[in-house]
Length: 254
Image 1 (cartoon, one colour):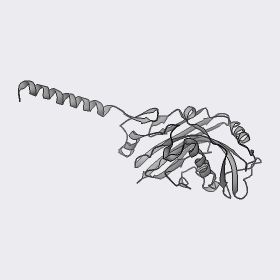
Image 2: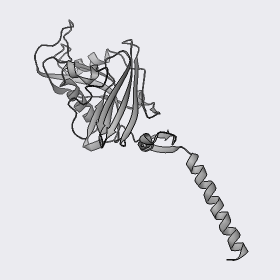
Image 3: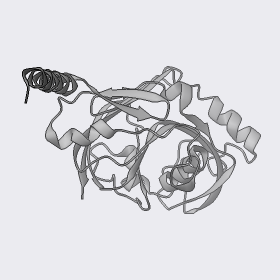
Image 4: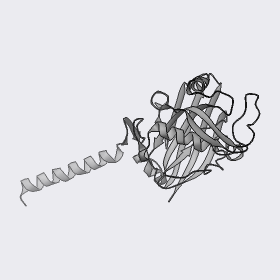
């Protein structure tokens, strides 16, 4: 090898070393359907999958359903669980697996006003549908029978002014502006001891079927990697004087 060739080879090797060092300290960027989420590489090994965080955009059809269709499925799942086991009222995460099936797993904010910490184990390969605030009005609660009346009832709650979801330190901030969904008029089944109450505050007796309209702020995440993850759901609704701040310590188990 001549001196000029050797010199050129050394320059190439040195440049490669410098470039590798630069890449090693650069943050990873994950494309999230219009959102560019920057995820630091300086995370525990168990959270390495967070560098591949993907949020389905509002116009997507994950697993064959639109966000609006998933919102209906979400409300139907939520309504079918008795109050005593409903994850919406759960303060510890003990009931996070209630009624969960199919390719998605629902994570709820909840009715608890203030800070809540929940622990939850999720099977690997499950997409996460994250509810960061909801409102609904139904016939069984005495709110009306038509789409127009039930929707007006939901609107009377007033909108959330601030909501975000944070996954392993990465914050999704446009939940209120981009991820608000209204359902059409839909039908749900409710069990005995349901989460629903009449206008006088008494629990709806027995079980049955009802019509409803719902509004939800939610994002759908592609499955997270096996290991430990932290998900925070924050919502502020000044009209209801309600702030929900829920942290999930998720274990994704293969």
